[in-house]
Image 1 (cartoon, rainbow, N blue to C red):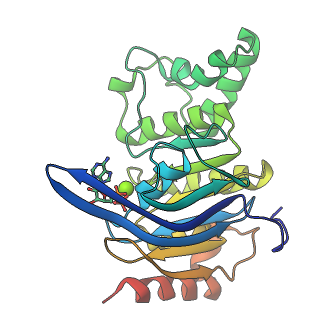
Image 2: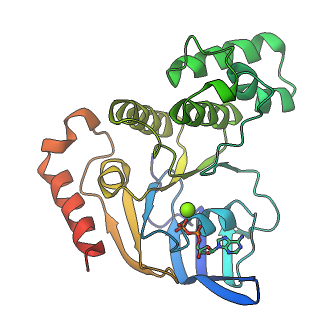
Length: 258
Ligand code: ADP
Ligand code: MG
């Protein structure tokens, strides 16, 4: 369950700015980001390409430090890799010499789990993400969508408290994307995950989020924070006819249309 509003935020961005220096040029990616994220919330981050969405995930994961301001996780500034987050980047980083099953099992092997437990967990995850029959395939033999699903299963094997998902379903066809959205929502609720979900698909953001943060073009600043009128328990298969969903999606589209 979502925590009451007065609980301290799990993630707090305070005056966060980030600039990159490359080839003698400075690129200001994000500026003045103030944002509280409550434990258990499903937050969508949307905005034009290059507005710093991935940069915000990188700072939450502790891979980059902000240039100005601070990112705090559970009350402490993020410094160094934030092990309480699991990050699915836009590229999947699968190990090419390992099969699908062996890739998904990596976090469990690192944790030193017994072989039988690894096998049963990996089997369940393979079924969950719809990769049955491809356990022994290598990444080079998979489609882009299948690689994404392998990466998602590996992330779930690692079982982090917070999921940082960077356009995780962008490469999937419509039917599979819907299945994965349903599963992600169900799992994030059941396991009480906090989710930061980057997407450039406003309909997807409207379908999944409790709250949507809309960014301006670079340097990314927060243009609006919109709370979803939908209940947390929602039927994604019937959502397109729900006037609350239609209204939210339309509001998001209006915000990014010049
Ligand atoms: P988004 O995910 O919203 O498309 P990014 O966060 O990837 O945007 O990038 C925001 C801006 O910062 C872009 O102009 C990008 O080129 C720049 N940028 C991101 N990461 C780096 C980096 N490691 N080095 C230099 N520039 C970067
Ligand atoms: Mg990005």
